[in-house]
Length: 349
Image (cartoon, rainbow, N blue to C red; front, side, top):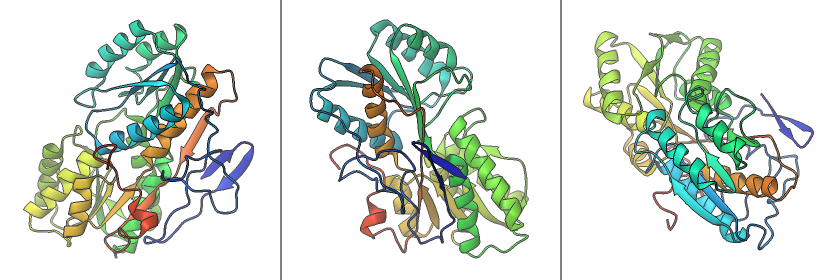
């Protein structure tokens, strides 16, 4: 897996479960107090956001769904960046991760004509139309976390290296003791969401290399914890030999942990979740989840504002930025270099 750092090619290496993964493979990282650090062997500096560089500029952040600690953490990074720049930030988001709910909100953003829009699109295809309208009207569009298939949309695309994250989830199951031949299952949100689709692809690739047996095609929770609990409950009834589960996002992981616990198989069935919200950390502490792949949403929000301001002010813009992730376990979660990646429930925490 390769990452580009202003013309320098970096190779991401494989780390053990309890090791801290390399920090974002991006040209710049947020300031001290955020979750970024330079990739070992490279030189990285914080984005230069000059005081007043955003004065009078209006930026909208359209998150994927309101209340998700991942997006709250992203908002915190964005707020820190606009504070430094003197810009205004308006944060919006649908109540569910659903393009039919988000698209009307994007239409309203088009009418308000902000200087820039940071957006986590809800669908790779359905979100493209409203975003193109906003971009064609002159607003600078920065895609954060998720993307759309239309590559003409977005001056910059900033997201976790999700395929690598999926690979790390499979490796985590191996470190947790699953041997070659073990039966595993992937439960995701919905097809057509760029971030989780990439996680599934990465997991399936690495799982095959490790000799794991997928008991079925990817199952879907529709981003509902209650549905994820039902899906894993049914899977365990159908195949009692199921040994490991990869849940591709926060709400799905919450539901899978609950369903495994309800089936009386906590610990026996290894659960690796994606994201590290407060509720997931509680499940990790309780032993209902054995590992979490945590992203760095604060970095994504901060960098998103930095790239938006660069575009607005005619500066250099980095078209594609991939951030890495860390694996959080009960054993390493209290370590300062790991704990700072646990997601926030509000920007004051």
